[in-house]
Length: 349
Image 1 (cartoon, helix red, strand yellow):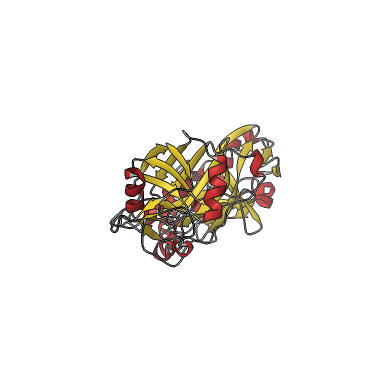
Image 2: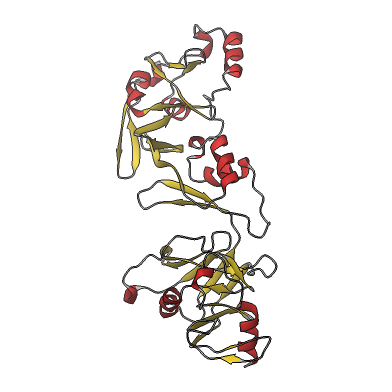
């Protein structure tokens, strides 16, 4: 009874309007088993993983700022159906039912903290409890069925979430700082995105605006593809965005041994083979995939979730030093700086 009394004390919170609209992913329940549960406090979400893949995603209510949900790595210690709640003020016991704040399921994760249902569904999506994790009743009952005692439960506080969608597009979310623990700067968010190879395609001003909004809505950036040149995996990716496949010019130039110069006035990239318009992203020069032939004398193709370039264009005979270019070095540098700079070397790989 003491355990249930303290659980009631910790988990009973104030109602708030729902702020979370993501619904659970439904698949065949009989084939599911939770290998791991991951809770992100700012997102107010609970994800269920099986064999490394997310199989369900639920909205939750978490602890208030002054009674926060504890961050850490835990596991399911106990499971109770139809728990009884004891009012910490009146000491009145409320059996499982529509009046019970714990709902119909309880799963202990640490001491007196647990995952449970609620008789106040409007509180889901808010910072509402005394530290426990609240779920819609149907959701917690579904989770209860596929979760065993001993299942790991990871609770984190990450305002920035970056993920790859089922069709390969990189999306990111920024959530409000409910506990005031994680102020964000543009460069920090860019670092989160950089691990997915599309950071050049999200402008700093767009990141700044997203931090300001912190609305938890997805921003879809681009779709990266591993880039191969003559069978070798490159450090940078090919990136598909807005109907174009972007190829990093410096990466291909180095791989093929072809020198390329850049005219910042015209925005043209030039080799001894030909020229193409530079598509600059945060100071790095890309070209459209259909400009591979004019600039490098090669073609590429997209297939099997990768972009492949084959052919050396006789590059051993085509090495051209930048000093041979008709562009004056000093005036080009001045124009380069005025234009914000464009990288044509290995910088940033």
